[in-house]
Amino acid sequence: MSDNRIYELREDNDMYQKDVASLLGVKQQTYSLWENGDNIVPLKHLNTLSNFYGVTMDYIFKLTDENNFNNIKQTKSLNKKDIGTRLQKIRKEHNLTLRELAKKLNTTSSTISQYETGKTLILTAFAYQICKEYDISLDWLCGRID
Image (cartoon, rainbow, N blue to C red; front, side, top):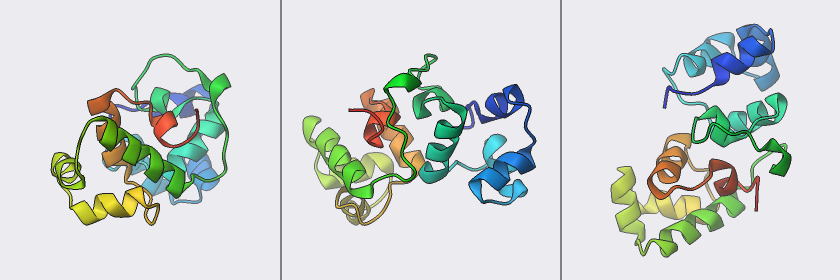
């Protein structure tokens, strides 16, 4: 998932890594790891970046080359329960059990259950994998569009 646009967006906005890191409340080194693709941007920070740059999460992670930000609900924080409900909907629409989805993501059924009940925010890597596999918008999964 290192194929994201956060470097391009930062450069296009004439910003330094330390400026974006400050906006996100993280260390510059942490942000650098995300920008270089060494680590994955957590969803909460991806949400902030998306709002700040006025682009969709789908655009940032190159799930699309179109930026339909006008349709996006800007939210300060993501709703774990809403994401969990949408995840469960995807799973059921594809006739998957918790165990089957967990196996696809190389995790446990209890982890998927934690996501679906909104107890834990889904990891960006899992959200991205689900979006790619089932042709789902990351912005939709995160409740940013209906």
